[in-house]
Every structure is written in C-alpha cells, then in structure tokens.
Image (cartoon, rainbow, N blue to C red):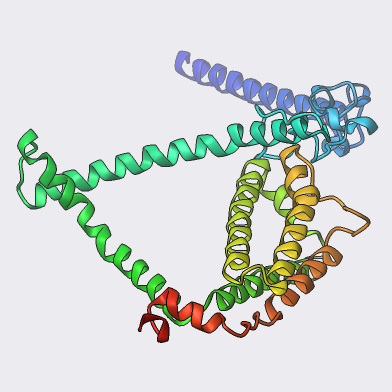
Length: 333
C-alpha cells in the first residue's frame, strides 16, 4: 500500500510540474510576442524592427556621424578635413596661399620637407641596410671573415655586381651620343613630352575627369606631391638640354624658339599644376586656358611643333672651323 501511494504521489507531482512548466513557457512566449512583435507595443513606440537600419536621431549613431549635417560634408581639397581619405597626411598643413615670390618658395619648401625629404631619408636607410645584407652574404658565401684587414676587399666585392649594369648604361649613352646629334636628341625629348601630353588627353577622355586631379584625390597629397617633384626634376633636365642645344647651335633661331617655347610651357605648368599641388589644390586654369583636355592639347601641339623644327643650317666657313675643332680637315695641315 505504501509503495502504491508513493508512486501515485510522485506521478501526480511530475504531472503537475510538467503542466506548470508548459504553461509558464507559453505565457512567457505570448508576453514576449505581445511586447516585442513586429507591430510593436508600448515598449516599441521608439524602436521598431523595421527601423533597425535607421536609428533614431537621439542615438549615438548620429552623434558619431557629423557629416549628416548640410554644412559638414567632406571636401577633398581641405587638408584639415581628413574624413573619408585614408591616404591623407593628417599631420600636414599646407601653407596658406600667397602669390608672392616668398609665398611660392615657402609653399614648395613646406611640401618638400613634409613629403619628399622623409622618403629620401628612408630610401637612404634602406640602401644602407641592403648594402649590409649584400656584404654579409658575400662574406658568408666566399668565407671571408669580417675583419678590419678584409674591409676593403669586402667593399669591392659588395659593389662588384653593380659594375655590369653601369657598364651597360655607359655603353648605351656612348652609342646614343655617336649615332644621334644634339638636334636629334632634342627632337626625341620634345616628342616624348608630346606623347606624355597625349597620354593625359587619352586618360581624360576615357575617364571624363581631369587625370592629375583624380590622381591627387585617389592617391593622397603625399604621393601626388612626390610625383610633381619628379616631373619638375625631369622637366628641369629638359630645359637644360634645350639650353645646351642653344649653345651648340650657336644661338640659332630655331634653337632659341625651342628654348622660349619650352620655358613658356614650364612656367604655365608651374603656375597651373605644380604650385597648386604644393598648397593642396588640384590643377587650375591659367591665362584663360581651361584645365584638362584643352591644356594638354596645347602642350602636345607646342611640343610637337618644337620637335619638327628643322636644324640650323651652317653658314659658309663654319665647316672648316668645325674641322679645326674636331681635329680634321685642312686646318690641321
């Protein structure tokens, strides 16, 4: 009797417990659906599931997103507003625009010290580290111990692999000097500049944007300023070549025209592209010539004209003077 009583009691208790648990879970589920469902209850007046992607204006989302205001939009030509540009040099503040000579010098110096000089320093450090690695490799492969007595030998063996490329460059320069006259070298340089201008025109037509401004926007001011210094260095060498050509051509009219046209293009590029880059601005219009295709077409036309100008014809008697200079002809008799 006692065993049956205990079985009945335990069965009743388990049945009551299971019913209570089932009822409690159903009630909790119904309450959750009524308060947090898709239609929203009293607790869902300020936040609904359909508004998940659009937080309320009083939440932290808009506190962190200041660009939602009308006057807080990001402007890519503002050096103090680095939002959205991962390549921007946030620690660089370009010089204020000053059209005086000292203002141009200060802007160029500021940009060079900020962007170009650190790269040159790091390149020098990398070169020193690379030389040390090559020296260590030569020492290990040839089994030459690092010792003050072996210093000169290791230095020579370290720089020895650079000798063949240097000899090849010297050979090519020598061959070019023998096969190409000064006039031909100037022609090649002018046509090369014309081709570069043509590439900029093609880029502008294909993309619909000003190519240098797009490069400045996408790469950031650091890379763009380094590129402008590279272009300025190359063009300075080009102007030096034109000056040497004037001397070789004995101030011939065609050589002088090339020098004047090349200097004019360089000045226009400086005012419209190089200097604006130093103060964090895209290329600008100069003397009414619009940026983009019109400017580059003008450059291409002038460079092509410089390249097709004929060589100066020597006057009577200059051949004999040249023979005396180069050691030939009757002047040596």
